[in-house]
Amino acid sequence: MGLSDVVDALERTEQLLEDDETGPAQDSLSWQRADDADIQLGKACAMLGTCRQLRQGTNNYVSIVELSFNAIERSFQFYLVEMTATESADYVKHEEAFDDIAARNVFSDEDIASRIEAFRSEHRSRFYYDIDRPGRDFAMAMHDLAEEIHRYLVEFADAHSRCSCGDRD
Image (cartoon, rainbow, N blue to C red; front, side, top):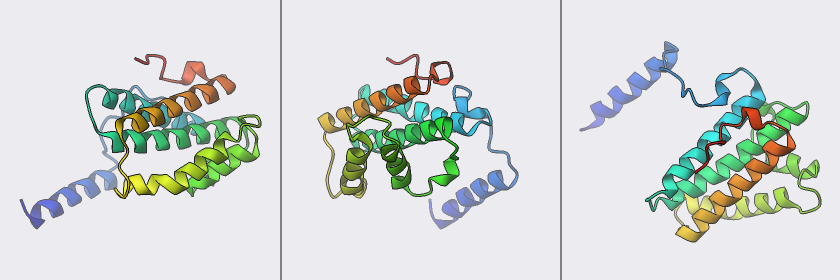
């Protein structure tokens, strides 16, 4: 193993993208459809599904926390694209989806999006860069939070038939 292996791997990856030959898509995801909202919904479902798998017998809490934050953001983007005139490309920065959800008062007067955004901006990078280390209880709570937000937004948007989370453990 050496630098030539890294170069070979990079070239293989670049070639697949250049040839548009990335292989078969994950068939369980709704984002295979062209609809922008379904793309975000499918990605959120996939991340939550991975969290469910990671919870079973692993102590990879950093991955659970990171995927949970991502699933929350994707669920927000799904809702915004589905229910408004926005596109997912309108949310280049993480905080933009959180701010838009908060401005639209999607969670009534509970200030959910702003509270999560404040928490995300303060703690996510600390976990990601290993300044703080999330423990099991925190990781499980983050995943539970992501699941509840996702479920709430899917129900609010009446998108149960398009959500692939129906087979939750």
